[in-house]
Image 1 (cartoon, rainbow, N blue to C red):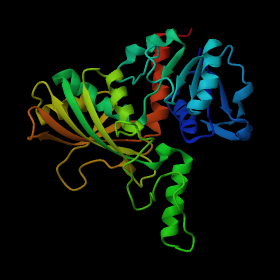
Image 2 (image 1 turned 90 degrees about the horizontal axis):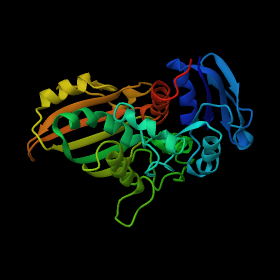
Image 3 (image 1 turned 180 degrees about the vertical axis):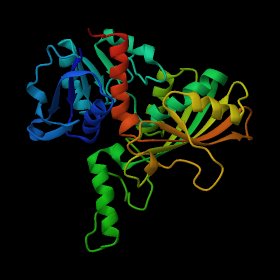
Image 4 (image 1 turned 120 degrees about the vertical axis):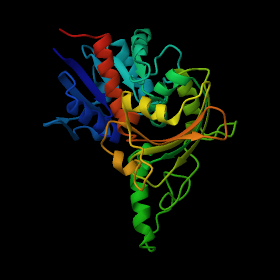
Length: 340
């Protein structure tokens, strides 16, 4: 037997990826519903070799459905997730709405799978921010071995993290560079994104951090270890898909770079590509469509005691969003909602 599964926000980038990954991983689905806003009602989306017509999220009855994957943003989630949860359907939410609620688990299955059992608190599980998800997958096995004291991370985040509008803006501005008559001023981003980088993702906070940077701090502590100190600088770059991160780690105990490399090679969800030669590392364009979090450039940091540097790359629409949500559903099924 399988599950009755709902994908809310099925016409968006992440929603479509959720459907793709559910099919690719052969998640046990008995019945599936693709939901969208009224303006997208009837839009067709693919699920494996099937074509689904979207239904109206506003009028959908979640009674009798087992799992709902939400990719509709915080405002819509605030309205519809409690309705689904009250109807007995477990919500796995991709927005930031519930991530910092102490009653709601924030889960990366390779890192804290046991946390899914807390779903019973509210019938809701939160999916972390894209940049946090890939980072903690790489950090967890190293933390288990040598205890991380401090993380300094700079991110290089693709425009797909800002949705379809971000992708369109990069595409249109890139074309307009070669056709100055058709100028495309910034709309989605605060400055031109084509041939540029922007050190600003989400809103500024009183501390001077952006909300994206704050998310990485708060979520890493909640998922991995509240005692870890984290500081982040998050940058939007002119890449369509794939987030990259330069990560500096300070450990309590010494960890040799060769041992770190061996640990990461055995870690779930991690792929090490680390050769000290031209092209012996992974770039964002190479990770698109892949499940793994790739780690390269592993090396000692001689400027601090017990320091390591590494480069981390992943498909933000997959591990950073849709894949992690489906993995949460798999973990939920294996631990809590077993069928048959």
